Length: 360
Image 1 (cartoon, rainbow, N blue to C red):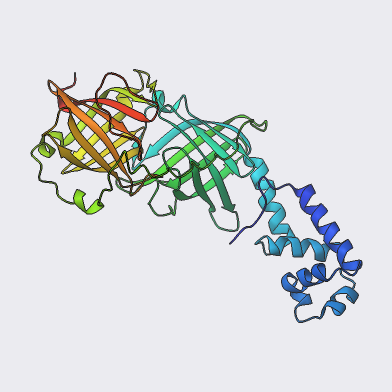
Image 2 (image 1 turned 60 degrees about the horizontal axis):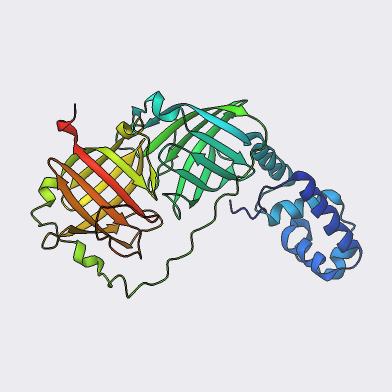
C-alpha cells in the first residue's frame, strides 16, 4: 500500500478535506470533478459535467480522500489514523531480544521510544535515532516500515511487524538490511530484533520531528584525496591479523561526548581480515573496511564505510598500540586526518579497545 498522507494525519483535518472537495465539486470546479473521476470507482468514465451532476455525497468525497491517500476506503483510512494515534506517547523497554539473545536489563533501561503521529525518536545510551514510519494494519500481523532520517542508521530502513494491546507494544524488526519477520520471535543470525515496550505516558511527546537529514558533505579535495574503494579489497597488511577477534571498549568519545563507563561493557568491536564492526546494545554502529599505512607516525588508517548514511564514503584517521590495547582517532568523511591524539574534535571519534579474552 502506497500511503501519501500528510505528516501526523488528523481525522478532523481529513474530514475537512472531504467537505471542501465536495463543496468545490458542487460549485463547478473542474479540478474537483477530475479528482472524483480519478479516484471514485463509480465516477470512472464520467465527463466533468456528468460528475458535477451526479449528486455525489459526503461519503463519496470521503472515499475519494481515502483512495487518493492510498487506502481502499474511508473506514480503512480511519482505522489507520486511529491506530497511529493509539501508538503515540512515551514507551519504555521491558525486554529486547536480538538474534535470539536477550539484552541485559541494565542496557535497555535508559532507552525510550517517543512517537508523535508518524514520527519517532529512539533515545538510547549509544545514540539517538530519528525518523518516520508507516503502518499497514490490513496485514496480519500488522506491518511497520521505518525510515531512519537522523542518527547512525540515517538513510536506511527497517521492516517489521507490530502488535498493540493497550499500553503494551510488541515490535519485531528486521535490523537494517534484514528481511521482515513473519512472527514475533528471533533466532541466531536471523537479523531480527524483538522489542516489548510499556507505555510510560500517553501524552503527545514534544520535540519529535522525525529528524533532519544531514546535508551532504561538500567536497574537500584540498584536505582529502580521492580514494578508490577498490583499494580496500586487499586484506594482506601484517596488522590485520593483530586486529582480528573480539574487543571490548575501554574508552569511547564521539563528537567530544564521552560515553559513560557503565555503558562501555555493552559494546564490542569485531575484526575479520580488513573488516571491522562495532556493535552497542545489539545495534551495529560501524561497519567498515580498513586500509593501513604504518610507514608514518602515527599509523594512518582509512575506513571505507559499508553501511549507514556514510556508506561508500571514506574516513581518515590514525591508530596506535598502547601495550596490548589499540586506540583509534577517526574523522568524519570529508574531514582531514587527525595529526595526533592530543584531543578529539567535534567531528571525530576516539575509541580505545582491549581484547576480550584479555579482560578481567
